[in-house]
Length: 292
Image 1 (tube, rainbow, N blue to C red):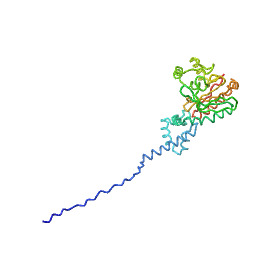
Image 2 (spheres, rainbow, N blue to C red):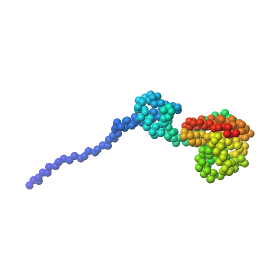
Image 3 (tube, one colour):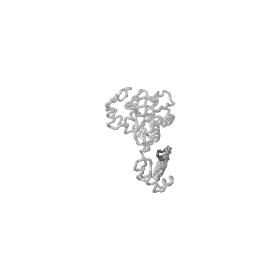
Image 4 (cartoon, rainbow, N blue to C red):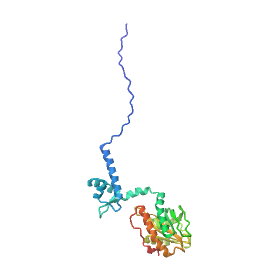
């Protein structure tokens, strides 16, 4: 008997699927978000160009936005602290958090590059050596220096560590400590006598630092090196905190108390210029007469 024929259905093998890269679709919300970010950064850049602040109408005109759009964007930035509004004039200025972001990227190399030309100008004006130093633990470290034109200059190298209690720059850094921080410093510090004039008693140093706080400047009269005198002024950042100090030093026979008093004004001006580079907008002028 013939075999029954079986009807076979043809089965096609599945086609291999090709992977296709799909570009993300920019939604209306995404486009709006990018546009808002662009506008916000444009507004901050425009505000930053006006150190005395800028009003809403002028700001809107400069960024090419309607007043209401600019207002809502600025209002958000004010709430975040990146922009602040002056109470009296209602003008807008850059807020401190933005300076904090910038300061976090400011390393010692950049600080040195900002300080060096200011120190060079100060040395040219006075003929004496100058230094910019910052705190390093319980001591101070020299980040930048320039030599003066006169003979017998201080041989102070960049990176040199100096004690805080018997140097003018160190006293400035100690004056920046809170009362509690300063007392902890006194408890652990070795108040070594570099010269017979060095302050080695806690009570005497406590009184000396209080004088520095009141005067806004510090004097080293042969305390670190018996043959040298130095005057130093604080350098502040955008938050008004003391982050370092500029000092001017020279031999005692050339830097009389009267000459040191005169040069203190030049040091003050240099400290103000460097503080401005770090975003400080206040007044760093001390009562120079306290150095007498």
